[in-house]
Length: 97
Ligand SMILES: [Zn+2]
Image 1 (cartoon, rainbow, N blue to C red):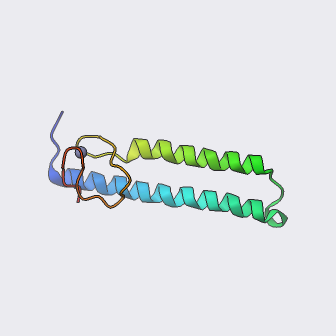
Image 2: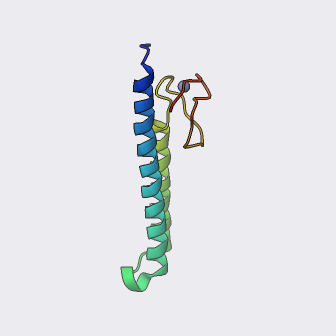
């Protein structure tokens, strides 16, 4: 495996973190939107609860797939865990910021 320099790792982590925060925002927005659509059927028209719950599950599944793909250490490619504001990779101890 080719060694990456520190700045490259930090830049890649920064990009991954940006994408991750965006994905969290989009996923939350869609889930809340669907809850609002369900509550305000007078505004948005009628959708069955099953349709909306399926759509929410689809968003959650897509988010998890994206996270598994995106939220990895730029150096060792291992999953980074729950904390979005990491400083160190817990697997290879690479500084991420
Ligand atoms: Zn690592």
